[in-house]
Image (cartoon, rainbow, N blue to C red; front, side, top):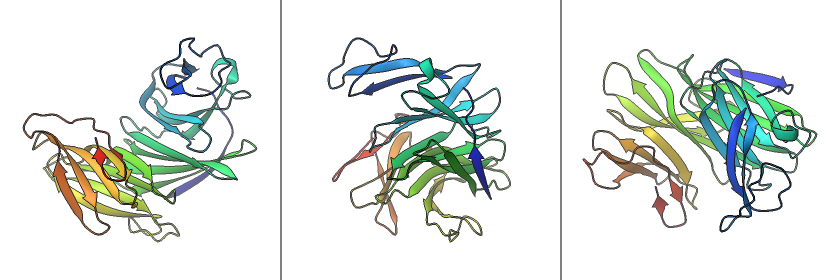
Length: 288
């Protein structure tokens, strides 16, 4: 299921703390400089009752522009905020632009995003868990040079009976800037939880459902498997997923060779460590 929207700007609120290099020229820049950065930007991006949980941040590697996605708990809406310097519609001196991504999205605890840009536009990829639909949702938003905001939202994995789909989402882009999403399905009645991967294939050729742009596959399953998933790609464009395994009480890494998955336990099993993991990958290592 897809929803295409041409959106007009709206208003919103949040606190941003970001270390950034470069020139500063606004009141919200701290006077002190930390090692390796020129200053810290701390300030309210937008304000209101019960905003900002969950929250995700991403930086466009080409432009350095910062993006924040967050949940408006009062209205159950998902919002996107990004720095435009001036001429925006929210934040101090209208420094930020605030955009409604999806109304009544109810993302609750799980949202993630990644950003890239080309000559025509900035592409924002968002994945989130819809508590209302018990599903995994994906939005591709494009910000054109003229400020036009276009977006398409589709359901990737719909809820099944007695399953909560799309928890613990983690979104990453491959070398071709195609989005991939690691996520958990939770079995309400038993221990058949699962860690899944949804990969963009396009052209309505995916297997998640008829007409989907994503292929969905199971990485592994078991009691509590897939909690706190974190996805990254190595230099060979192969996915690595870190997650917490409550049965062993330790974090694990799932490594793909392109066709099969292998698994490595990190740390000491039985110590109940490794919740809220995050993975980073270089040419040789997977670090969590």
